[in-house]
Image (tube, rainbow, N blue to C red):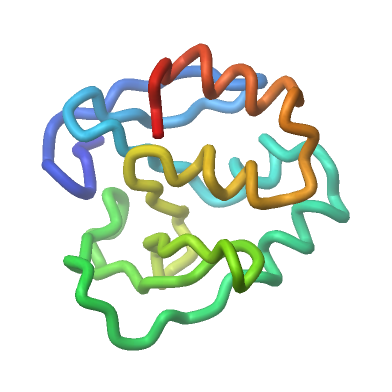
Length: 130
């Protein structure tokens, strides 16, 4: 699979038994449909986070294409309004694109324990990831 941002081939990494696609060039992350929920491993928290996604409307950020269907992804805000993070979501439901550091930001914006296994693994896998 090629990166939605810089078009480099992505590598597959395993995080908490979930395969994520990672670009070593721009450090973006692609999560297939359902993988974010699997990372959270808490159904109520997953529903809460997914319910927080709000269409961004007009954005100055460059549009990206879904690495699966090649359709232009829609911009959505994720997380609480005061900490909303702009993400790319496939309009056909294939998955979510996270620019460098955005997955960590989304997970930290939720009520996850900052010492949770997922947060710690992200810090280890992507050392220095902002």
